[in-house]
Length: 298
Ligand SMILES: Nc1nc2c(ncn2[C@@H]2O[C@H](COP(=O)(O)OP(=O)(O)O)[C@@H](O)[C@H]2O)c(=O)[nH]1
Ligand SMILES: [Mg+2]
Image (tube, rainbow, N blue to C red):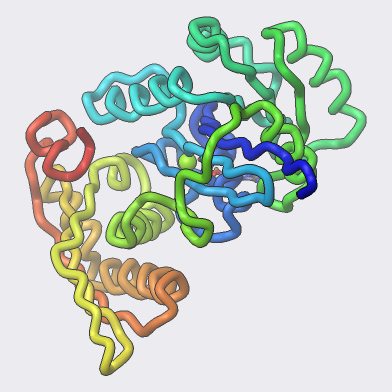
């Protein structure tokens, strides 16, 4: 028998400031939308696993909330998720944006100092800047930390992602395939459904409204005979005024949120979906540990 190549597996955290494109990269890697994205910061609230199956490796990517100065309990929870993921993995991908000046905030370098794991600096969104600006940017970043390498990419267009992926398996320890080959994530469909509803709210509302919502899927009922799924979900908000905004004049806003989310959910599940949304006020839930826990942020 020919000598078999060793199998590698392990965890790779995708970290960075809010909005740099972490979830966009995760979706591109697994080839399916498992993490919601938006132009607003603090879109991602939880760690989300994306599984990449290769012939000789299984790479477990962990998408994380953006690292920032957090003040509210919910934001502190989010940043804690990211910080612990960064220290808990085999490889760290630190994403920064190409169209921004060099990120000199010491928060992330200080965090990475605590880890002995290799860190790859990923310069994302290179589609938004002239090519001749790239080399000076790489040179400037290389002074910040001893990176295992610096890789420019566009997570949106896919440029450079393959080069980035080629670097990763060799940095992982030898290990088994932890998850079956056809599995893309460990989060339940219900979670992704709730996130897709929240994504529509991020797209369609502004100011503090999207930051005050938590979605609970109360019913997820498969009907194999009709080949459809019935879903009831509650949008919890912090204040009466937010409830009014989310329902909108004559219910138009809630209808738009429902239609947009239903399309995304149907694409994911591959069946017809009947989606019913309700809005409920849970006064100041983002500062209540008990309610945060109830909504899955614990
Ligand atoms: N032009 C461009 N936009 C990107 C790229 N990657 C992400 N974005 C956009 O940046 C915004 C934030 O992306 P998201 O993945 O939610 O960022 P996260 O907060 O780091 O997870 C979204 O509007 C994305 O479409 C990229 O490579 N190029
Ligand atoms: Mg994200």
